[in-house]
Amino acid sequence: MSGKIKTNFTIFGGTGDLTYRKLIPALYNLYATKKITSDDRIVAIGRREYQLEEYHEIIKDWVSKYSRIKFDETTFHNFLKQVDYFKMDFTNLEEYKRLEAYYKQKEIENHIFYYAVAPSFFSIISDGIISISDCKNEKIIIEKPFGETLENANEISKKLEACFGEDHIYRIDHYLGKEMVRSIQTLRFTNPIFANSWNNKNIDNVQIIAHEEVGVETRGNYYDKVGALKDMVQNHLMQIMTLVAMEKPDATHSIHDRQIEVLKTLRPVNRLDMESSMILAQYEGYKNEVNVDPHSTTETFAACKLFVDSYKWDNVPFYIKTGKKMSSREMNVIITFRPLDAESKPNVLTIKIQPLEGVSLKFNIKRPGESEEVIQTEMDFCQSCIPSHRINTPEAYERLLEAVVNSEQTWFSKWDQIYLSWKYIEQLKEKYSDLQLPIYSYNQNTDGPEEAIQIMEDDSQSWGESQLACKR
Ligand code: BG6
Image: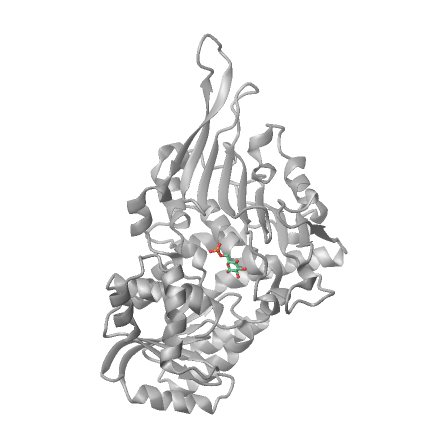
């Protein structure tokens, strides 16, 4: 492979799960939709001794299984002309000279480096890249948790910023590429029925629920050090929470600025009654998972009740709940409005993020016929059930990779945002452990421990079955 290259994607962790499952299929989709072309290249870096043909064979299976766009032999064949495999030990700084020599054989205009590896490698990879780059035309895509500890993540961030500049660092949170997460703003700010009632006068509680059916699969090594709070809550779910609670962005306040305002007004951890604010639990059998400590106390489930202490959200609980090995895969944001009187039921707006994408709204209506009884009914819009919507909606990684190519930073996090949410989650975790609160246990294929349901039920008005998603 030689000739002038417009954008060269280098993936550290080229033989890892993220690359196979998400990145290569996303790049294939970008190629198939002509967002990347024969002027671009993908270099997968791995430690394994693969011949290029072997690597191509492997990714064929993944692309055919995970690509959004229907797999096409000819397109895939042409796509492979852009994909190279480079064997190297990226923990050995000496090896970067070989990588540099490899790049020098080509005329590369722009580099994009993707860290698709465990955070323990971020530091050494950063040193390696910095040692061979001119700190001009490089963009770095870094995955959460951005480092092993907050201090370590801060150091890596500073190191990268010093060389490449903040504008060239893309801290990716793939939830910000999901269609319905992107739609939260549109729903909130373009519909008067929601825009005018989005406050504590009208909203009783907000639930952000992310249930997964899968367990830790092959990622025991990573997950056991991280747990649900840092794996899901600190990033994906707090991103969503801030999008739900933020003020409208405008010419002088970006989405980022608005999200930061929310993070700064989270009720301080020392003012939370921990016992009724957080439940951590682990699924039965977790300790037997591969690469998990048999005495592990890592949580695979977290339920929290948080507050935003602003005039708009005073005393509105934000329930955040996530777990692995749950009975179903569902990710929903549920906004429960206050009912007008004792007779009527609350309006409930559900933003369905996955697996189905859509919006549903519960509202009151008269029971048909002679009866004057008020009953609740539901309008349910399934966006992803419409084939053309599904086909035309890019996957999260596809959308975010394209944004990096186009230098669009809007949907990537800046360090201050990561810092605030990380710090907050760390404080929650510390307090929970200082108080020696238990890591509960829950059976697989359930909705998590009973105690978590209790957190939500205790202060909800008794509106019956449907109000709390965890009860479904
Ligand atoms: C990742 C977490 O960021 O998100 C995983 O590390 C989790 O543990 C995954 O399974 C969930 O993503 P999605 O898109 O399947 O909801």
